[in-house]
Length: 453
RNA sequence: GAGAUUGUAGCUCAGUAGGUUAGAGCGUCGGAUUGUGGUUCCGAAGGUCGCGGGUUCGAGCCCCGUCUUUCUCCCCA
Image (tube, rainbow, N blue to C red; front, side):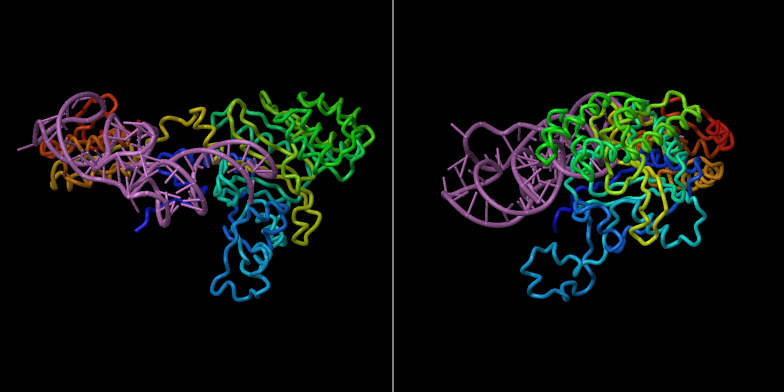
């Protein structure tokens, strides 16, 4: 007999955690629905042909792969065994766990394109799995909450994403956050202007670290990766505007020779104007050149949400991808979406103690009794309470009152009804307020009226 | 995937230079009032010292491997 244990990077969620997680899920779901998004669920398991090659080389390694059923090694030759096991994974594994919700969504859109009315807006709240090394705020199984629109390139979608993020975070009680926005076209333009066309990948990886390692180290890394000193010198204006909130004019003069960049700046500015049009009070959005996440498929806007004064990675990321369904043979469908990480939001709300206090209360009233007769009498009352819509339970065993009250106390049940011989005779039950200790003699109808107030 | 770090009762941790039966607090269970909780008092249960090897007369403590925790790189929610 061995001690049970959890798989690395996974967690159980006990009742009190689930209540809090549900609060987050409900808030997100409600907001997504309010913006006209429809629910979708896809399988945890996907064919590897769907998942592989969508997240870069790194991503392929981080995919959890499922061994084929039966004699999974049957197809292997002696020569295969001599190689690195990674070389023959395709021979022993055909399925894997989903890595994010965007690729399965793209697959769904392609497979159902005939029946979907475009633009199609869906939201999806499901777990995803990644085989990377766990750290704080980073798990191997975690939930993502995605909302995406496909079939339109209207920038209204981008603006609505900004609105949703503000709505969700504020409803959760978070106030000190920043919605960072960038545009892939601007990054492309920068690479162009400094004479490093096609190098934007390397460029982005480097400048993404700007706030972390500083200007000097970023430049050092670029040189190391083969950027010319001239190119690096051309980046000078970038460091100047890294701290500005919406430096569109500066960007225009710096990147005036790049049509792509100008297009990107136009797009950004329109998003700003649209959000203004919504009349959002106190917008917490900020342009951030260094934002270069999800490079593999974003083509327009790039989003990320940082919670200020909390040491944790971003709690949300997203952007526009013009050709996601292209890899499944359907080109020309533009999409834009956002993904929120519930597990990190949980950690943030916990750290800032922002969870509402009354969330822990699941049972509103408990019946306690002293013997079989009282318990039987209580069944009817219990049913009445539940019929009236009150969460109610009865202590199952005829044990000492002390134990029963102790149970109610620890479960934070706010009211207890005592049933004994006196109560059964008079028909007046004792309602005890567990917070104040106050007791009242009431009929079951009066109790319901009292609790429903 | 690379480097570092952690692992002792349900939880948080002690455990002295390797030496007899491994400790505390909290929690759990029972009792102090056979109809009154959150306070107090008494008592009890609970540990293959992550797991597997090795060194030693002797290992919780030293060595190796493995799993796990946390952190940095990488990448990301």
